[in-house]
Length: 246
Image (cartoon, rainbow, N blue to C red; front, side, top):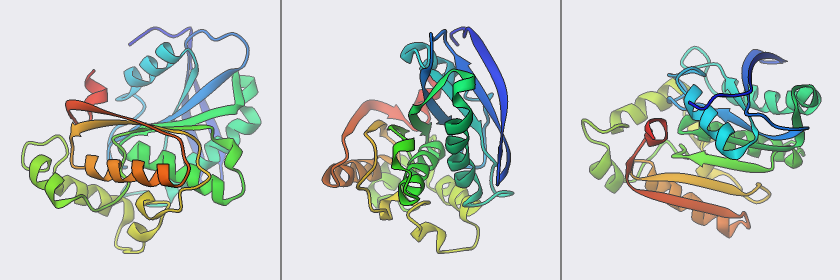
């Protein structure tokens, strides 16, 4: 990916344990807005390394600092561990961001798939904690908003050979939520059930051929109805995980 002026490894000490961060500086001057990025992989797979190029691309093209979050993976760490780590990282950046060149008053959260789930979940958790001004934007890339996909989406795009199959959706949610059925009713895990007012502007990057797309369209409509500014682009012919292959 694009070369950075600096790539720094940092550890945020949180109540959910230490969280490793990778900070991409494309060459900003003064304090920079930051995109805090959570990689996808069904809360189970992948890492800062698998998404290194993606984060470099966002830093280079936006001209802002990107902070990759190495959150704890499932099934060893189930909901809400990873979510609480992301919330804690946002608060940590509020205290320590300036020393890293980050303007903590201009932070966006983003991620692909499970990372998009963690992004909106963290924004909801901070809003509910009376801290809505900590997050100023959301970048949601084929995000997981609900455990349940529409039957039509599963039929068309969730069969054998798909990038994200119907069976994998169940597997990943079981890893994240365990045996507790209340997890999929919790709005911080399944934002489809959330009250959505008070969220910052949302940019949604959605592939046409994905089991999650119908739910994303529904969420875009719900966000708009709640007074949230939404920009959604559906990429024709694209599948789940396409952002990693662009």
